[in-house]
Structure formats: C-alpha cells, structure tokens
Length: 333
Image 1 (cartoon, rainbow, N blue to C red):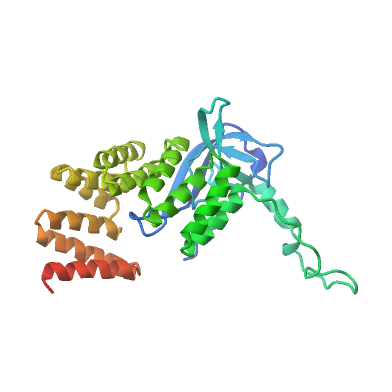
Image 2: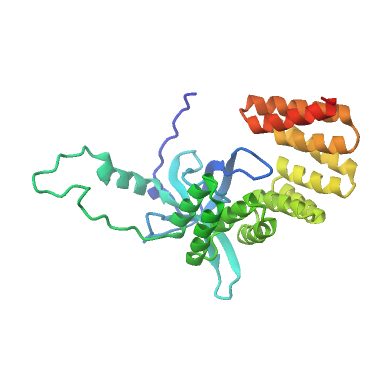
C-alpha cells in the first residue's frame, strides 16, 4: 500500500510539558502472541538536554515497549519531532524509583547529522597515496547498554538465547535500571523455559514501568506457567485497569480463572478477549482448549477450525498444523 508520509515538525520548538506521542510495533509476547503489536502511547516532555549523549536530547515519560525503538515521536499535530530510542530511569539517592523515562533524538538533530554524514555524499575517488577505508584504522565505538541490547536482540532472533542473555547481563552492569535490558532478558529466559528467571526480570520491568499494561500481561502469563493462578488473575486485573480494552489482559485473567474452576468467569473473559482480538488465532485456541476440557467438543471444534483458518490466512504454518492436529483428534481421525 502507498501510505501518506508524515510531515516533519520543528523539534527546536518542543518544550517541557508539551504532549508527545510515541508510535511503534512492540515485540511479541512469547506464549501469547506470535506477531508484533501496534502501540500508540501518550506522554509529556520532561526535559530537553543541552549536552546530550549520541544525540538523545528529548526526555519524555511515555510508556514505550521494546521493539518500538526507532519509531517516531509525534507532536500534537501528528508531525515527526523525534526518533524514539533509549530507556532511562530516575532514581533517588536512597534507591527509590521516581520515574521511568524514554529518550529520543530530536528530528532536527537527526536531519543535520544525516546531511553531514559521509554516507549521504557522493563518494570521491581517493587521490594517489591517500589511504582508503581498507587501510585507515577504524576508531572503535564506546560500548553502551543500548548497543549491547541490540547485539543481544540480534542473537535472540538467531535462536542464541544464552548469548543474548550474556549481552543483556553486560548491559545491566552498565545501566542497572535499564527497562529494555530486563524486558529482553526476561523474554530470552522465557524462550529457554526458565520461567522463574523470566518472572524475576518482569518483576523488575514492572518496578521500572508500573503503568505498563503490556508488562502485566507478560508477567501474568509467566505466573500462569508457574501455576500461580491467583497471581495471573491479579496481573490480568491490573492490565485491564490500565488498559480497559486489553484483550490479552482478559485472556490471561480468563486462563487463571479457568484453572481455579471459575468457568463462568473464565468463559466471559475468553469471549471478551475474542471480541477485542477477533483476528488472533491463539485466543481461539485457548478457548477451544477450555471448551474441550469442559466437555463441549462441538464448540471446541468450531474454535479450532476458526483458529486454523486464521493461522492459514496469516501464513503461520506451525500454528495451522497445531490447530489441524487438534481438529483431527476431536474428529477421531
């Protein structure tokens, strides 16, 4: 599709107290979603840094989830005034958390840097005797927490979760309250099925970002995996309080309720989750399993068939095959 380009704003006019929006596609929730989710968060500019590191001069308090880095920061007219990037935390001397903050690069800073970048200029043939990039020593960049998180993310995408965890550990040594590092390490532990370690990391994520509904959904899923069904319900409740249309919040709460024999409450939550997330096949799979356990095979079959159709439509071959296998079991094939 051809989308209309966003207009560029003037980041020099952005001041403390102004409302800004961060937009992006958050990372998947392992065990809950198989795809990234669109997020749009509102916040305020906390300060402008005169001496910024690596160009990160905008400081704001929007909730921003890993995976959203590199997305736009928008002003109230929808103009791009920055690029969302780092996470930071305000901590008092006594160790008390004050606020979880995000940092962005003002768009004017980025445009000026791009204009002056050698990569945007026409390359010139070097004169005789002039060193080329093959012979010129390269100055090594300073290792940063963000750089290590990025390296870890690349390893995680290749399935090297232990290597990713090592990078996140180093990032946390440099930046002990780094929300993104705890989040990504928790995801990596989850992939390794080390649910207890993942839970401990998401406890830290929520400490650093207590109003993040997304984080409560993930922790609720971890608590469910560890058979803490009351904890899963509590996290589902909190996700719904923070974001009333949190389809995954209802899903996590419903799963906890089902395990605690509250079938009426559980199915009410599953139905609500499907109403909010009608194109998410895993939600149908969860309700199908619950219906099958409850002895309602006909409606379980309908849910599995709906899930299979959505998986196929979305090109998820593994999910499709999983749903088809359940259909065959129910049909006695």
